[in-house]
Length: 258
Image (tube, rainbow, N blue to C red):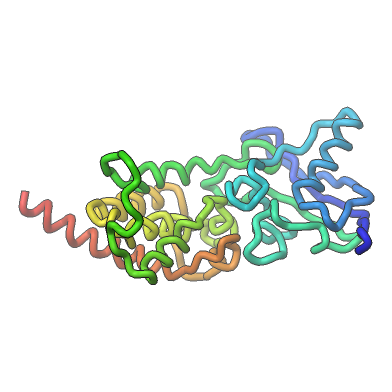
């Protein structure tokens, strides 16, 4: 199979730091293989810029296997680009045609301030997880897999939620800059399982209220589900809302007893 080569125009957001207003710069880049990944194409651009004694474009990356979530980019106005269920690092240049102009931006959300160029600060996600996205259980050897019977539909639903890679595409795609899909996924993968029941209501209350400190409100646009590279369902938001209502009632009852 022949390897098609494309000539492209890249319109890239450049911003030197948090206090810089930022601007777009255009670059011509030639002979890009359609087998190259999007990040490999940016590597070629940066090699060209360095060769011309210019500042390379800063962007996040790590695993390049669709696992770590750091490769987050807005590509032609779409989170992670034009292919569904695909992180930026898994996007290949065959999705574009020779002669195309590709607009590349960082996530646009007030909770994700731009650090430099295409890199944003997503530490607000860390604050949500730190507030309750864990279980407090004695550590030790791994128990037998069948020690705690878990119905397969429950196990499958928990695993689906646990696929969240924390990339932030849901926030970037949401018109309100809401983080409900991320937070609900992190809550659901614990709240669905027996090991997560002891802290279920404390967890959901803490994580939702921490989320509300940083992010906008969900109004069920559904853009988060469409942008998610792991196709996490907005059903988890309904589960989170149900548990949050129950948590407020349960915790109020417990306070009244004390």
